[in-house]
Image (cartoon, rainbow, N blue to C red; front, side, top):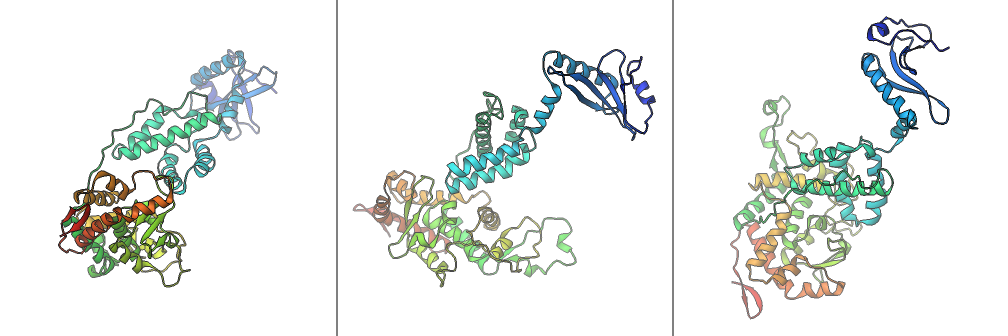
Length: 458
């Protein structure tokens, strides 16, 4: 039964209402439909009762007494009733908003219906990594229709220290919200990424000198043999009761980790290309590596120089069925290289091996430690590729040969890769590989000169 009152709903009056065995409403004397419901628990909630344009009765919750005041509830009630007078049903609108997809749903569809259907595997992996690491944590809980430019700007601004990554995140967000409009999750022309300026990116030209390569080579050999020292950052850890003796505080890195660094230097390949190498793509007799999945979007061929051949021969398993990957992802490998500034307690534990290749994140984590010990804190893994290009340029090779050595231009047919990998690019590749290998081993490097159209060392 509807209960009314001849009094306006004020804080004092609402406070005076006592709970009964069943919930009951009290309506305001001055604003029709506005009321408060008193629950048996003593909880009191403000509401508006109205009929929509179809004549159906609706109850619209405004808030809990105490969380909002009676006067604020009255103002909100007037707004609801004004919307009803204009033909809007606030209760249906609220229900639709609650049932509307959030950004997490949108990202799931983006990955399933766009990324995995339209992008090659290496690109898919990177897009999914960015989505999971940056976008989903920041925006996933928001409703798609409610995301504002300020929300995306906040995410973009949080990555200002890594401008290239920030711009990648912005670009992916822009694509995601373009698709949201296409899929009718948002009105057209409302992409929140519009007018968010990209950061200026610093183009790196870092490469390793002969001395730096010598330090790196020494650290790689140390990592395989005696191991690299642990980094104990937490205060008090150095004197912890169960801390191993200092001579035991080292991590021995598996050969696949150090071999990955060497292959990056000897081949000039990108990290994703090295980690994705399979034995079926390697022909040691012909001296070639076929990369089926490259940035160019088509297969490319890389010549194998002598240092790279030695690495591959050492890695090749006796059993051809052991693993298809040149750099397999052993669980022991991951345990050994995932250092986050804390004492490791599970380096020697054996776990079930993985059938996949060495993971990018694991390789990046290993490189962080290797470069720190080598005193190369500003060197990224991609700078190893820059080193190959720089040494090739220093040898006197023209821009076309360097371009072909690093495969910067697209090639239309697979057999042309083999031809370009034979000569003179193969000669240049051999000389660059020999110079890098000598530096890694601490040997004196030979000068490379051009004579009679060929490159020779002296």
